[in-house]
Length: 255
Length: 255
Image (cartoon, rainbow over all chains, first blue to last red; front, side, top):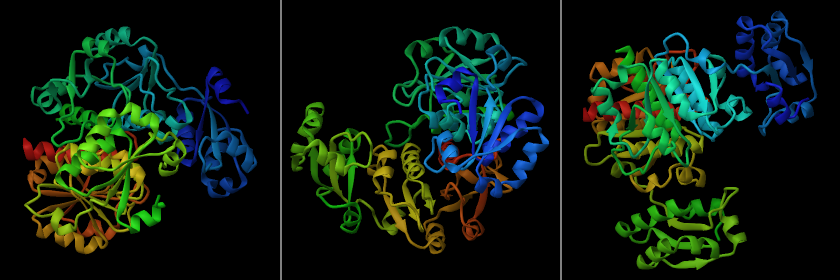
């Protein structure tokens, strides 16, 4: 079994649990070679006979492992006993932005895996065209991100960009208006919507929980937008702010 | 130091960290007797001199404790070394629903403390009038909920209701339309908004992450509403769904 750092270097990741494994096998049918192995404990095999049949039908090698081996592959305290070893499904940025995207979520230096996974799930839910992970952010194929995305990372292209500054040019070149979320913005989301700004093809930029977006990214974006706070809360967490922004865009674009 | 179960029975809770302590002291100025003690480690006292001055000015007894004692009070792996012991600030349901509320968040059997705290923070952010915690839900003064609420539980009334069925009658009697969030609803949020449903005074009902709302609550509510899924995600997590619903109501009511 490869250890985590070696796995990342090898371009592999683990999808754990019945839901993620089902999504991985579904992805495999259109992208052969994605699932390299499926590991199951005896107990998990008994609980997931349909899934194991699907894996066999897709030509995936299924290996029974001990509870201890399954626990060693898992980073949760309650391993589900079913883990797919997958080839990375990251695409390059040009591929992710091909075909006139209308809605893209960009995670800039987002370091919390729960937030990253939740935003990938949200991007999928609103029908976004891609997710881009930029700068020194969490690995989108980190097991915690995979888990929080509940399989959504198999549903839309995920690309990485090492340089957030040139990324903004590439987003603009793809026809996307870039909106930076920050609590300090003058423009609020309701005004952005009533001004028609959200009907444009849009890349939403989200930052880290602790530090938000870097100032140079906010300055370089087409507009900075805040989710309005009507009460006395100081802020929203990143995933809930992203939910409100992405659904506002989906609503405006679908009219 | 009281242990957790004894604290709950004694009608007390702990607010940990500089932000929660600041909110607790702020609450104390209008509600004397809320903060019973403030415990700080030497290191935390050095980092939070302004806060300690505020506590003294508010007549709160400040006790220096060892790092080990602070860690014993904390349920986090990185204790912040500053903890306020507070008298419970729960109000009764009639008080929470007094004064023609326009927007209320109801957590029905919500058992995940992160979700509960995040929804309290959201309810505060949208300017909701109250949060009601119903049925066999997490204790809203559980340390994990307090932490996830980032101080918002001091900003709006939190009430409990042991019986979700009679709760619906009480919400209706307070003039609130009751909307049950469930992925299986026919009515989607965009249609509810365009039909004018969200402009009414509303109590949003949210369930548990794993099981959603009980069927009898969905049946008894004025309407069941789903957040639309445009892509291939199976569902949203409870806190992000709540973000979208509560902001949709705030927008419609303020629009």
